[in-house]
Amino acid sequence: MPILIPKDLPAYDILEKENIFLMNENRANTQDIRPLKIGLVNLMPKKIETETQLLRMLANTPLQVDIDLITLESHESKNTKKEHLLKFYKTFSEIKNNKYDGMIITGAPVENIPFEEVDYWSELTEIFDFCKTNVHSTMFICWAFQAGLYYYYKIPKYPLEEKLFGVFEHDIVNHKSIVRGFDDEFFIPHSRHTTTKVQDIQNIEELDIIAISQEAGVYMCVCEKNGFVFVSGHAEYDRYTLDSEYKR
Image 1: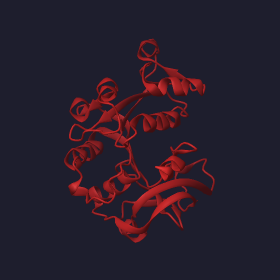
Image 2: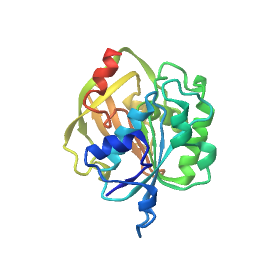
Image 3: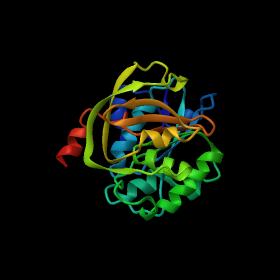
């Protein structure tokens, strides 16, 4: 089924060439179906690349999906043109009264900075609070995995001696419905300087570890009570994303 995005969004042409079913607002208004309403808080520097990757994955659902791209007012992006953000993104103040079926909060290259010293931390915690009341289910990716665990459960992050970088094998240790269809062993890219300890997550009663890697640590844990899904890796990455990060 289609994802609903503006026809002039850069991702539209890319995904259309991949034969992904897309729909603009004019056509969507003629459909007698309520789409899933998904918000994407894009904290990554290369926002167009990230939005394209995540939209590609969302297009695999059998349901119609309506996307709100969300940016932070308290941070000025240096790698994405302001015109792109003004045209295609909404601010938190513009969506704070909305209800969403799902929210995705991406990673960000700020792992080596204490959480409270990140320039947009205050605004991001407002979004974290919003997700508990206005969102049915939220996915936190990479740095957002660590930030969410820290904000909700006071779980700290720890620096690694060497950057964790590569594609690592993971095992499913808890066969909940969220991993239905997964192989028992699967591979996911990781790219980060910090980690979260397994024991810290196990100490929180409402968190369930779903998948783990001997090399990369916990990949996925969930809080069913709040509909939270925390993932430490980058299942959305393209084939050459890690390669370009390494060369950069």
